[in-house]
Image (cartoon, rainbow, N blue to C red; front, side, top):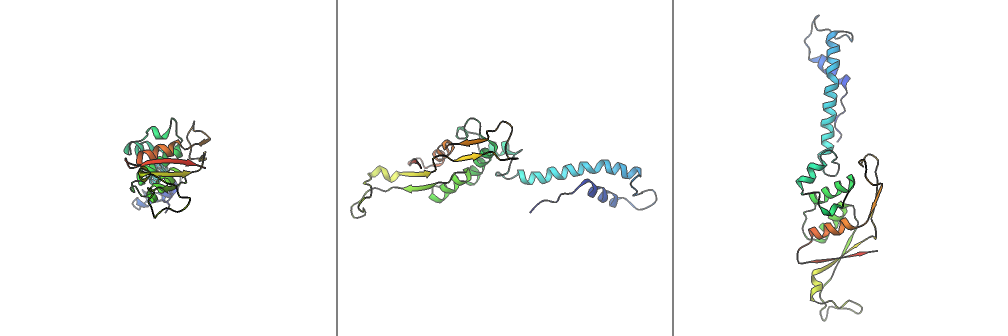
Length: 198
């Protein structure tokens, strides 16, 4: 739902509608009262525009002016973001941290990565046991019960978006360092993630 876009002319009509009736309260365009109200109306239009923008800026995935507020609330920026993350990368990290508390399930980790902008799958390993192995299955030891593999593309490319980038942001960014760092942050302490890129 989009917020209404109310213009200064609309506010002028409303302000004139609030005035009492009578000869001393003229509505003519050249009247002094109309000129005074015409001077006030743009302030109300600007306030409405800012209030409407606040509705957009209040959500982590679209925050721009309040992005630093979101980051400080979520303990960001941190080393995972890299040295100079772009605005969309910062928004993605805020979104992933904000909604990514789904626990250690595969689905929640895949969703967390998707919120960061990465498409991944996860492969689980299990200790090899007699009667459960098939020909060609890996013979994994006990430690493999705690390992899991993150499968991702070799490079995830993030292109600059008009209107969503800040001055000085790179036109293209690629790599999986943010993914690896963030997965290391959310993994259970006793598990070992292995990253496989193809």
